[in-house]
Image 1 (cartoon, rainbow, N blue to C red):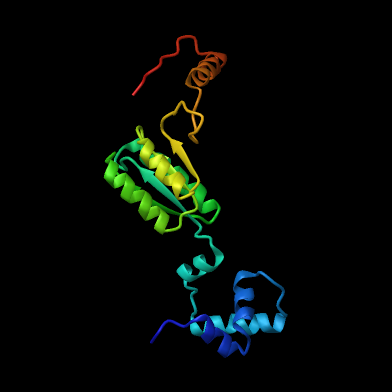
Image 2 (cartoon, rainbow, N blue to C red):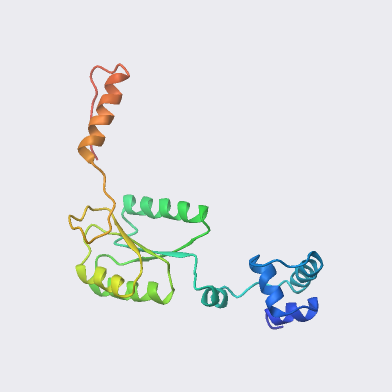
Length: 186
């Protein structure tokens, strides 16, 4: 049996397709009676909206792309995990691709993420070619660079003031009464 469509829901509920859409998207007022008919028809048909079609109409994919140098690098995997956790809080899905730092794979990944209509790209890489940034900009996709501070005004990047952070950490440890703190770096 074919997957039921929005037209099937409208027919069973005895309402227009736009009424079904309004109920599903909660976009405009619908009478309680019509709303209940639509919800009953959706349940009866076990209707699941076609997300691809919905994304095209709404021009919103609720997806964020992650272009990562190597998912096998532990700290990079942790960054992806953090992005995924935050994405879930805001009902965003993550589309991830690992490029191993290869330029051609990075180009293909950007093309892939563009075709998936991601709403933004998070780049997790120690070194990213300017060509990739230009390609993302040409596609007009918002982006952010993580993992390395890029000292250029035309890059969107996140960085940490490590010296200030280490000073605060040291002061905190000393303020707790520790007289001989030990620092180990991995």
